[in-house]
Amino acid sequence: MEKVNDFIAAMASFAWGLPLLILLIGGGLYLLIRIQFLPFRYLGHAIAVLRGKYDDENDAGEITHFQALTTALSATVGMGNIAGVAVAIAIGGPGAVFWMWVSAVIGMSTKFFTATLAILYRGKDSEGKIQGGPMYFIREGLGKKWLPMAALFSVAGLVGALPVFNVNQLTQAINDILLKPAGIYNGFQTDLIIGLILAGITAVVILGGLSRISKTASKLVPSMVILYFILVLIILGTHIDVVPKYLGLIFTDAFSANFYKGDAFLGGVIGGIILLGIRRGAFSNEAGIGTAPMAHGAAKTNEPIREGLVAMLGPAIDTLIVCTLTALAILVTGVWQSSDANGVSLTAKAFEESIPVFGKYGLLACIVIFSISSLFSYSYYGTKCMSFLFGAKNKGIYNYFYIISILVGATTSLSMMINLIDTFFALMAIPTMTATIILAPKVIKEAKKYFEKLKNA
Image 1 (cartoon, one colour):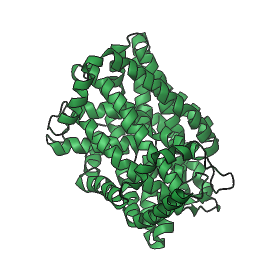
Image 2 (cartoon, helix red, strand yellow):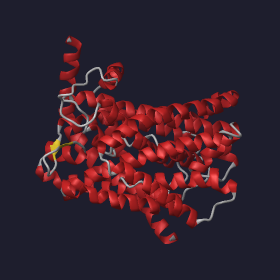
Image 3 (cartoon, one colour):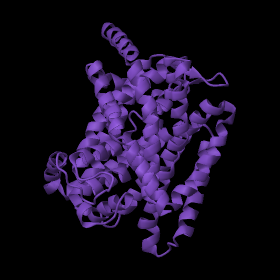
Image 4 (spheres, one colour):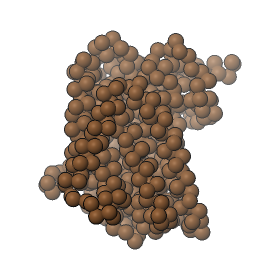
């Protein structure tokens, strides 16, 4: 098992090397400069679209703008925000958070382009139903000769969409917060029982299809963000005297070479902290990976730019707000230096330190909702990849593999699960970003047309 773990870690480290960093961050910056920050000037309009002001029942698509964003957010606002941030700080210290922010701002631009393309180049599956996502905009926008790249995205998506990291961290949280203190933890046996319960809950929802997934997500996501927000504000209020110090440390530490708990694959250089922050930022908001365009591609709209604007709000909510809250909670309580815990256990210690009796249970409630809603959304992404590769009539087969993978996630190590998903996220990012950069002029042309029309309305 240790050899498998080392191999997957080496694979993740290789996949997240300099070429991918250039593609994700360099490509995102290129998109941002090409469009001259134009979408950022229309954030108010994006919120109006999100609230349903421009909804039209006769438009093509399956779900509303709000449901598309909450379906995408229920996949991204999850364990990446609670456990992923903790992993980044445990290894790279406060400076890693700064690079997560950089990743988020650039990610907003990337999400604008990829979600616009998901509507602009919607394709049809083998049953003739309209579909969106990188595999479709590669095929429809770039032509049949690019099909191998669309296939690479879909094959990587079959593994990248598995919920193993979320399940792993939810299992760890239930064990650390509830079962171990109560003395009823039995190792593998307990993990397996948790896995079986989660598999049962997930099966009920995902076998009901996208409309059930999006309806469930649109109810769960806003409430969990609000609850999490309140809990972290209590922690920050308790430690208000040191908040400015740690905010400052995020900036100063971003350009130092301090590795607090070391990582053989990152080395002791500033570049390592940048890589770590970008990697965890991408894991958290998934900008450039290609998952969110699959949800946004199902939105009821005939205006691609509108969906791009709505999608752009994702990294702002996910990384700039939720991840920052987690990071500050971990930093101001000092648990990142005083504890050997990692992942979700480190975040739990921060909550327990500031809100002694109820903190960890409040966090557990958030984790349960975060994780379970993520379980629902990721299955949708996997079935879309399956449908593209093997025909729509076979997409349901994926759900059974997906449900079995929940048992794997519940009974294996954190490092193995996070490195496995990191590797396949990297393989998904290559075709997504390549196609987005090539098709960028089409999006810019549409954007200028749409914003001109908006000005004259």
